[in-house]
Structures are given as structure tokens and as C-alpha cells.
Length: 101
Image (cartoon, rainbow, N blue to C red; front, side, top):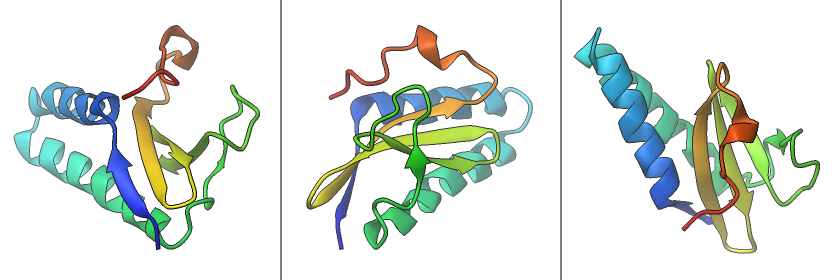
């Protein structure tokens, strides 16, 4: 079993998602963010479950799809780093998602 580590960038993404949705529905904002967070727990036992990120073409970065969101992560021997949570309607090439801390 590996450890799930949320990067600062990914946590910021969740905050921005919540703030955007909260304008219309505070309840749905909580449900969405909680769902995204919980969905990553599947990676504890199956860290390579998701597909390779097409824009990268390397097994170094993988993604899970949850609704309109791409949860992009980097598996390692004992951890999975959640790099970003990206809404699929946005252009991912405009973001520096692979530079994370």
C-alpha cells in the first residue's frame, strides 16, 4: 500500500474548484471536492490504475478521470503524488502542471 500525497498545486486546484462551484451551490462544491479527494484513495492499492497522460506520453504521469476532472498524479515506489486536478474544458498545455511541490 502506498501513501497518497497531495501537492500544494493540487490542493490549490481543489480550493479553486470549490470557490467556483460555491458561487452557485455551496453544497455541491463540498460534494464535488470531497468526491475528488476520496476517489484518489483507490490509488493506495492500485497506484498505476489510471491511464498515461496523453500530453506527456510517459508512465511517469498518470491520470484518473472523475466527471469533468482529470486527477493527474505521479506514482513512485512508496507514494503517489497528486500533481493537479484539472477541469477537462480548460487547455492543459497552458499550465505548468509538471512543476510541482
